[in-house]
Amino acid sequence: MQIPRSLVVVVLVAVVAGVWWWMGRSSDGIEVQVATVQRVPELKSYVTASGEIVATKFADLGSSVMGRVVSLNVREGDRVTAGQVLARIDPVQAESAVAAASAAVQALEADAAGADNAVAATLAEVNAAQARQVQADQTLQRTKDLSASGLTSKAELDAATAAADTATAQVAAARAALARAEQSRDAARRRVTQGLAETARVRDQLAKTSITAPIDGVITRLSVEEGEMVVMGVQNQPGSILMTISDLSAINAEVKVAEADVLRLALENPATVSLDALAGRAFTGRVVEIGASALPQSGAQAAAREFKVTVRLEGAIAQLRPGLTCDTEILVASRQNVLAVPLQAVVQRDGRSGVFVVRDGRAAFTPVTTGLIGGLTIEVDGLSEGATIVAGPFQTLRDLVDDSAVRVGGA
Image 1 (cartoon, rainbow, N blue to C red):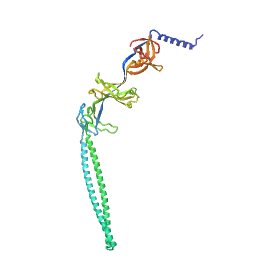
Image 2 (tube, rainbow, N blue to C red):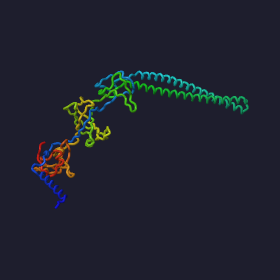
Image 3 (cartoon, rainbow, N blue to C red):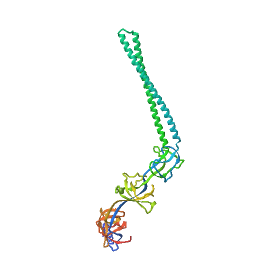
Image 4 (cartoon, rainbow, N blue to C red):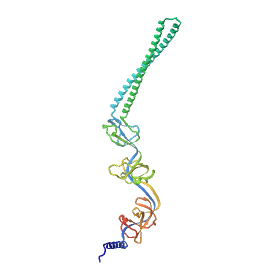
């Protein structure tokens, strides 16, 4: 009688399962690493990030005019004060432009003065013509009265009328001349105003040949040498940066925090900053700024988003210089007197978080409530202090099942 193939498969599966179950319950068990549930006085959670030291306030000085650096009055590391002349750009062309503009303004002001005099003279002519018109009108009126009484001839009346008309025409002509003179005067004044504006512009260009410090600080970067040509910036084309002045009385650490951690941060979180350049020293600080949007990404491939976070350093910061790299630990939360286990010991089974507690050589899955994560340690609730739990290896923890036989191996 031939045994059905399906029955053979079922029997083999049952045998394999039985062997696996027997091996799992054997005294040898699965080799694991264990840890003890401990009560810690304080558990702290940190966000770590890297970045660089920057000055709280700094200024990159460029040139607003094109030319050659004819004098350089500072060196890198020099301390400067606001308003101090740091360098000079060749001023010859700007000085020539100022002289030409000043001469042009003088000529224009002379023209404007002549136009003012012309207006005054023409106004006098208008007044005189108006006076003559009044007199001619009065004479005409008397002649008309006499003519009506038959006391004067028609020729005299005609002469008086002609004289009045002539006076009226002279007033109109004088007023037209005054209007033309006023237009010429206004045009001359506009030319003076334009000349003054041009003079102010070229004087400003001359003033910009002197590079002055906008703030008190230290020359932290000097990018030019005496004799070099510098250019001013135009659209889509940056100009020459001559130097950078940094106010080193206040120093920040600007770090990049991963998007998974940035929402855990808050302003005034305390921080500790360390630098490779000053090994063994740590600087304290506090968070003063958290980026509202992610930093731009470079390259075509998508990467984890990062946010700029600024930490204001405190204490003795005289040795720090902008550009030094740094590592930062930002304290985001702390809990006192809590039970804690290694972070790796917490696993997921059937949608629940728990650990494997070792009892009598067997691993029992025990659900827990997790809390604060502090480095490689996590707060738990639901365990007894001093209990032995499975802490590794990771591969074993990933596949471990409830009630498995275990034995303690090496670390």
